Image (cartoon, rainbow, N blue to C red; front, side, top):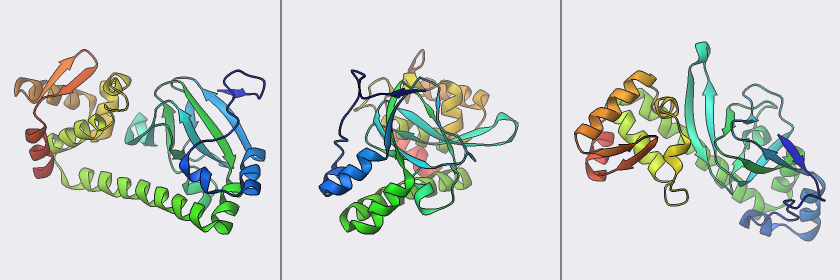
Length: 231
């Protein structure tokens, strides 16, 4: 991780995300005065589960994954973050520690904004507060859907749903599957790496997907959706 200074060529003066356009000039000044621009290298932790959190991250560029750390090196991947998303919003509304870890899948640039500044803006600017609540509830909805998958679907259904989920990012990042290891895929599906590899090979034999080293191409979306639906 490296702090990006104002004198650096890749320093960004203003955050161009739509939610920040809702701020009044003095409110924008508050954000500028409480932010730090940081470069995370690939495989750096953006957040660490259980660590004290005094800031919220806004992802300017790069891709990251969100995961829960379990015992015996067993992790569960929750979602993928793409540019334009907030990471760690829960610290504004909840306790002062991160509820999850997040890891850079690529080099990432992020703005670290003091959580007290975000909290103040939410209280004082209704439109900005509403946009933050929409983002926060959308992230919680994703978590509920993930919980439903783990509780009620068998391995085939979990794998199909994982592949369909990751594939939704292909339009923005055609190499999205190449950023993920087979263990990452397994951790999204909540199964062992060995089971994930076996399922992927079975899906390939059935003509549902094509495997090209780390890349995965979804061939029969209708069948994969049916497997995901039936669980």
